[in-house]
Length: 142
Image (cartoon, one colour):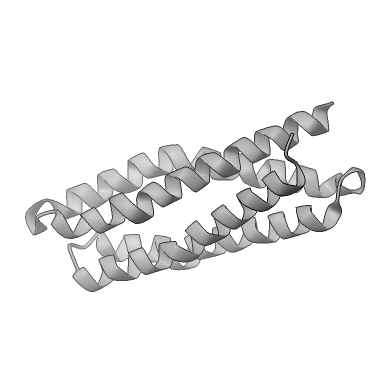
């Protein structure tokens, strides 16, 4: 029973993060181009703070529940849970090694190329979250 509850929680978190990342990709990051240079540094700092409050706990919980499901995967189709966890690791890697460094550079001020690179860096995360959510839903529809 606990495993099913954790699986459902993990699926819910995956879809929540998928929704958030698509909103960021399609609406939020492109809007960075319309922020005035004079306000950009403050905007970027507020973005980092507020986004971290939302995404930090959700991504951490997704990682923990994904690791738990992988650890007990002998009860479930294990290959799906391995793929799921690999996707999580890839998302975290892209976040830590590509997106966060871009945000740190953007903290210095508005730069059109950095904004475009940030939008580009987010595509793999949007695709990976969408893929892992759909994969989980296909294999665990209930």
